[in-house]
Image (tube, rainbow, N blue to C red; front, top):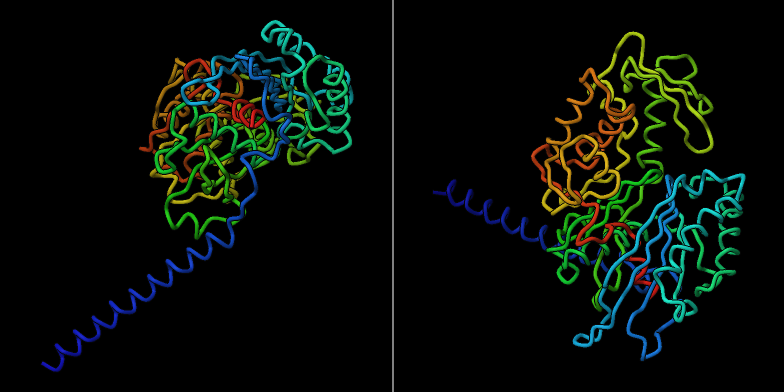
Length: 433
């Protein structure tokens, strides 16, 4: 009896200790949330260009340029007054893209400005002349310019800024700038969840994975305690969205975009001497089909790409090099695995190139993507010289770095209801604030 009593007492003690530990856990977590997550102001760091339009103006327009690493895109958004809610409603979007990206004009800044002006002329056909003077235009450059030396990026931005000032649209000294990586992720997340109608409830909002040429972003609204406790504190910020203040997990990984990763993996997978030198421009890679010889222009350099003579080629070899490149550089909260995920930009483009989706939206599992990539890397015919390398990298990013199981379903979206799923719409809403 004494032994049973002693065992019961020990059990009670353990339960009591467990409750105390759990209480401390909750308390510390709460302290963590209030201490480490700081209010950083309204939804965007971009300056408001104006507060309102004339009351008799029915339509409102915003022009946003996305100066990406592989191309420059113009978004002209048309908004209409919603009399029932008192809010602006998105009516439509005009979209066009020109290539190459702004970083390719590093030594010719006026050419960069001319490429933007070509697109700005298209906006004049969309926006009525009577409201040009009150229609804001803004350009935000992303990873391509972030990776350039500051003197070169600033010369490009200065040339574009002067071009904007000579245009009939509304500009100021902050109309042209490099977009902060966190804002890039936030705007893409906002665009996605606005189009899905999921901004009001954090637990129902979608996680946005955005893969550009020079960087990749992960953004979502965390609801699980472990995410707040174990994530790097600078990844979680408070933002005011739809008149609510909510915590947002967002981080931009500079250098992990598809084009940057492609070059790094070519260095790692090549068998020619000196392939690890940064200035090397010739590669014989295990990620390239043995019969391929290809010229690739990237960041003002031209590279000669070949398959290896030993015919060492395939998904496993390339996936392993991608894992080696990624290492443990990406944070992966357990919550990722339980949230609805939308994958944007190059995630969508390369899935379409693999033939596993053919619409503007679709859904696949991580395993579906990896299987299609394995087939591509084992085929005798080559669809595109870099498709095996690129899909191997995306497979490693999803499975190894983000920790997504092969059974995890992800949604892929290029457009939703005819609107591009880019960060441009989020930036436009911010300009209207």
